[in-house]
Image (cartoon, rainbow, N blue to C red; front, top):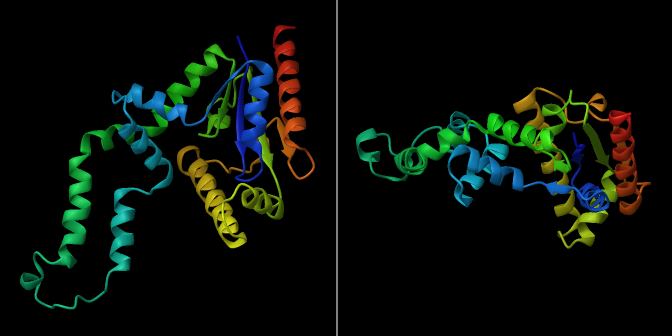
Length: 237
């Protein structure tokens, strides 16, 4: 049985770079968005539209929440009191044309995408059976929590370091980088809570924690690779 590495990383921590370099050192495959592509095949819709639908499941709340949010943005009292006169105008179109068309036109794909957690679990578990992969995100540290051949890694960094990293990549201004970090942290924490009922930063989910403030990318990659080799030897010993 080959080893599998699950990689949880904060935006701007350099964790993805560590993961890809570790994969190269070990001769492993690195899987990130590819997981969604394989899940789309499992769902019976092997196309980019389905991949986007699955990605949508990762970030967007359900239809009811979207309806409530949209209602919240609308005027509590319609400008035109008569419901009959409002028909066919923008107030009604927001809930009919925009939501109903979106919901009905892609209903078949949406139903498949709603099985997101099961699809992702199937793909990740299938790769874990074979081993030789680094799986980035998607709750893999929870899905494979009790597998003996899985090494769970978390890479984190302080906000100032993450901001500087994003700005160096040309993300934008300091304010934009800070906003992107806050949004990413919020979405990733919500994802783990929503689909798996765990806290993203729960230290008991991981074997190896890497502080990117002090550990550069290459060192982090070698730490991951060496920890993986050690785990493999302990399995075979």
